[in-house]
Image: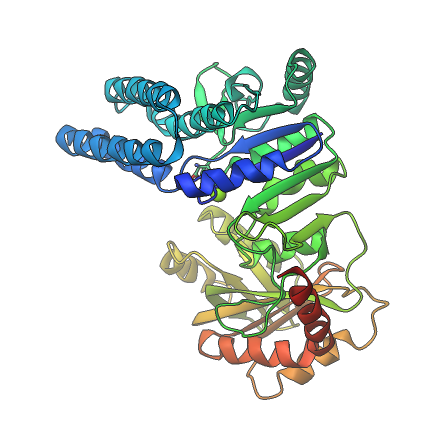
Length: 446
Ligand code: ASP
Ligand code: MG
């Protein structure tokens, strides 16, 4: 059993849906196909809900009309037979009739329409191609408890039973949507379809979970700032989580936890270049050396300097309590005997935080900073790895270094104005060999 999840862009147009159908057809295993909403739909549904909340019913109606029209165009381009055109049109009409009846109190039901529509349209399309696929409602198995956490045992029981009862080799279901502890429609938060796929893969003990997006997997560095980046063939869950947290937007770290815990590899693939190898995330050893680099902007650094507190126990606790009080997470932290430096990425309560911290010492704040995160083998046994990193950055002022927090990561804090240069210097200094190896791979697959 394989789980294939396709994101919003992959089902974003008739042409793209046809590509998804080809990918689905080319598999030789039983499949669960998890779909996101057509790209833009969930955003529009959110806008519709916001309009209803603020009493702008005309605006909600107009947005709904425009959204419905966009589906008419999609249907025209997707189906060739009159039979399926009509079937899909009737379905869209009914869905929008239902949507128009929903109110400001039905936020989650409004948001659920995107995935309900994309999965139905895809099933009709496969049927037109004479591929018999079952449509299994996510509401029949995907559930969350009162804390919003997935009920993994129940999901497993319900889903395994349904899969046994279904005779088709292809099962289509919705990402993102679920029922909550009151049996009401809910969701796994924005971008939650990857999480759905991971939960489904874990529940069915799938051979592999494939996440199909519009890029060639994870890159070794940020392609927006660095030329000659390449997609990584293989990465461990731990390394991927470090990168995802510090800016590699491709996958939310939480979404792969069920896969990691059940030892199910996650393959990142590109719907628009299905022959490219993509990136496999699995429980493997960290890279021999450095696997990849990512950067996160919008970081604020704070230094709390206090001679009075020298060697005092409880000093850090008091500092952390201030951040806890203002619900502001700390990303990076470094300490010396007389000072502590730490970073945050949310400035919302910064003034209150600074005011309270002043009771402990002198506070210095640096804005416009970036965390550069390197993932790879940073364990005690890896000799020379940190010196090779620092060697690349001889000309770049470094504000903080975090090393030894985990075996898989080293993070540096620098001024955002120096970020592009730093990423390029690191790329040149650390990936020379890999680039030539990967060039051959790219040629091989193009
Ligand atoms: N359609 C939902 C969203 O846009 C879920 C997802 O695509 O993952 O957030
Ligand atoms: Mg997505």
